[in-house]
Amino acid sequence: MKYNTVLVRMISGYHLLCIKIILPAIFGVADWGFKQYIKYEPGEMNLIITVPHGGSLDPTTQSNGRRWPYRKNGCEGTNGECIWTHGCGLKSAKCIALIKRDDFTMRIARDIANEIKAITGFRPHVVYNMMRRTKLDANREIDEATFNISDAITAYHDYASFINKARSSITGREFRRGTGRGLLLDIHGSADHVQRTVLGYLVHGKYLDRGDYSMDMSSIRSLGKHWCGTDNVCFKEFVQGNRSLGYFMNQQGLHAIPSPQSKKRKSAVRIYLSGGYTVAKFGSRDGGNVDGIQLEFSRALRSRWNNSATNKVVRAILNFYKFNY
Image (cartoon, rainbow, N blue to C red; front, top):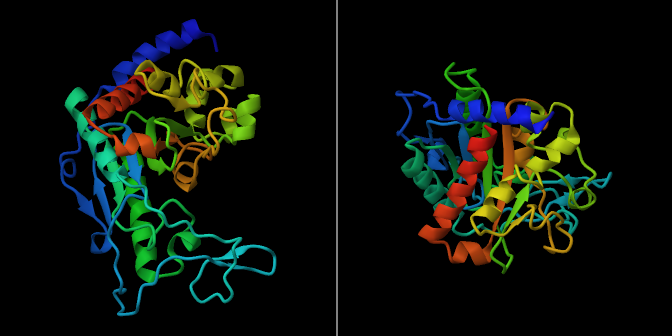
């Protein structure tokens, strides 16, 4: 699709996303899941923020009175698959359950949501996992996430249900007032000691470096289809070029990978995280009109997080959002 045609659509898209979604019954009132393990703050716009690894709740006992052990390594099955239960037998180093918390990400998500509200008058939807990752990893498939602990399973379903509730308000299936297209931002933290943000679109690093990828493998597939049809050259502008979130972060003086300043991850970062379960499940790769991007804020950026960082990140998000949605 030619960019002069895109520009006309872009302008009309900008006006669409400024329309307030009127949800008087739920906006402004937090919705809690089972035992307040999951929190949902309903929003007024076509933007969702999720925070799976920032919680601090550490229950030691399940509601049935049984002990609630930490998630640890799983066992290797006969076909090499991982078995994620506490009583599976001999634990395997091949089946590592990650348990490190992404410090400060709950605060960062809250700051971003509040700043968006301050600038636009509208607040995004926000879904928090309030539990420590040692008890629930909301960014994994259910077995690895919960280790078959019943309370963790309930919380896991609450997390997914709240995300789907937010998505439904956007696409119009539930409230019939959404504009139909939206964006989910999944907030994480990396151990990187350089102030930068790694953006994940489900495009593996080796394909990103070669430029050998298509919109059909991406968590922003809907965005690509909307602006580019089937033109994958056009689509790459939304991942590495001047229509990407990385571009708008660069414009705010922020280092982002991928972006026009760092199109390739190989020379820029040791470990490139292309996106996890949340953006795969709730992004648009497998259908739907809500795209997903994983944001990995480095430890250096998170530990120095302040009002200036909040404002820069938010303005980058809003510019990306306004131009593309």
